[in-house]
Image 1 (tube, one colour):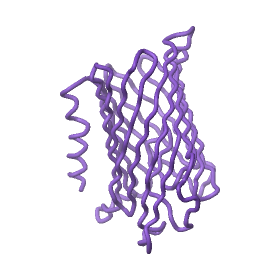
Image 2 (image 1 turned 45 degrees about the horizontal axis):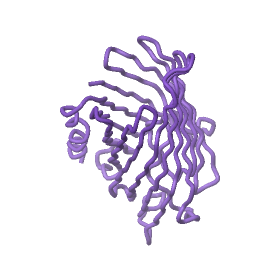
Image 3 (image 1 turned 120 degrees about the vertical axis):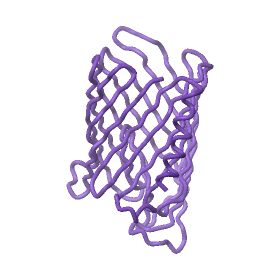
Image 4 (image 1 turned 180 degrees about the horizontal axis):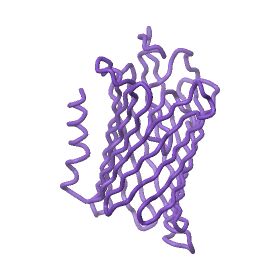
Length: 284
């Protein structure tokens, strides 16, 4: 299984390097009991207005070899087209094949607007919005036992982003909100095995009905420290949680390396999860 995942990621991420210019990025986290998650993408700029970004993402809850069936992979493709200097159209789709009792597929489309290049110390502002739909299917309960009948859920969501450069500061913000669930009620013993929080590498579990996060970094010629804070709410239970990450990126020519820590629910000791993160980026 690991060899198959590695080969697929090579096809999706490495092969496009021979066809165009772009950026290759890998990031990963490790936590308790062998938890690990890896995300990789290749940003391929075709130099004709089109940009394609294939992703491969993977995580597993334990490092025990016999629990390989507990790992989950996602394959994602993002694309954009530059209409002019100010506007860009975007689209994305992902597929999560059945693994560990979960399956999902999703798609979205939107637009990004860059109103100007520079205004005083403000530079490269960007505003984006996207709408989409995710379809989930759960075959197991929270303990991993097979459900008598699988649980289906469809969510329609909106996503808003904003970013800018303020002198040497990079500021980013993101907000995602589920507009509607097809099934308004969630069985008490059912969850979903994959949920993303903006600016975090680690994968958590549950149905997230809304999340908001900000990320701040300070650029220098060699190092770039960063910090991000997020707040999110679960749909299947009345609970609000926080996410925090901090670290430092080291820049060296066209390559950058970073390391840091990610913490989910830092104020609740019983639910707190801490992960150590590392990432690498190379520009071609």
